[in-house]
Image (cartoon, rainbow, N blue to C red; front, top):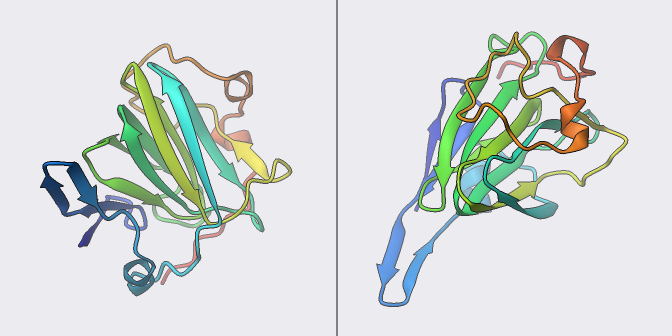
Length: 185
């Protein structure tokens, strides 16, 4: 059975599950449309991505603009990450705030709603992460924020990450294009 727990930014949700072990290994549920729908998460996941990274790789902080914005469901398959989300919804009481959690193959996954930048750094020699996305990747709408923005002041557990050339050149939050508006429930 899936278990949902909101973080300090309430729309970001950790997803846990019962784990069933036997002599073959384990089985656990990661996604159930009906249970997500009960939480008000109705958009289906359209694209599934897999990344494999070496230790100290930092991917992010990424997002896509409206109308191609993506909610994400993140699960570590092997290894360990420090996963970070940043609220980009203008007018949100949490705008510009970040939340970070450690995730590994034995822990929860995380649901990141639309309107958030997302990134993670790897803490294991080899790490595999699965991303489920509610919208297809579209490079025309892809945006990001530099990982070490001094205003965000994210407390990353690594100080000299391995970055892609694209991620090295992302803008600060104050210069990043953003069309997300907070809509209270």
